[in-house]
Image (cartoon, rainbow, N blue to C red):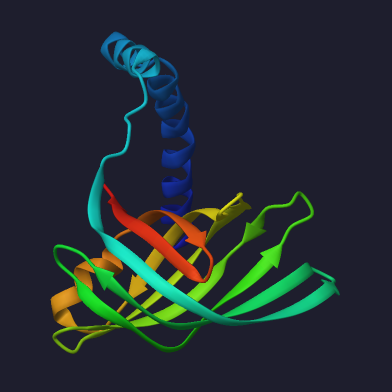
Length: 180
C-alpha cells in the first residue's frame, strides 16, 4: 500500500509540471512591461555618508623582493587618529600595511589596525585597495571593513565603507565614507 501513495504523488508532480511550465513561460503582459521599463532605467548611483578622516604616521619599511606574488613592502604604522562626527579614536600599535607591489606600477595595500575610541571601545579596521605613485607620494582608494563587539559601534560592522586618500612623506590621510 505504500507504493500507491508514492505513485500518486509522483503522478501528480508529473501531470502538474507541464502546467507550471506553461504558466511561467507565458508571463503576463504587465510583468513583461515592468521588466522592459526596468531595463531602460538608469542604474542607481550610490549615496555616501561621511564617516571621518584617518591620519596615520608610518615608520620602518621592510622590502621582500621578487617573491612568487611579487615584491612585498611591510610598512609599520606607528600611530594616528580617526576623527568623525560619530567616531573619535586613536590608532593603537601594533598596526601595519602589507603592500603588494604590482608589475603595472600600482600597488595593493593590505592594512590592519586597531582603533581605540575616546570612550574606550576597540574597533578592528582592515582594508585593501589600490595605490598609484604620484609626484608627491601616492594616491589611494580603499574599501575598509570594521569589527567590534562594543554595542555602541556595532553599526560599523554592518556597512561597507570606501576611502579616498593620499600619502605625502610618512603621513597617510584618508577620508572615509559609508556606502549607502
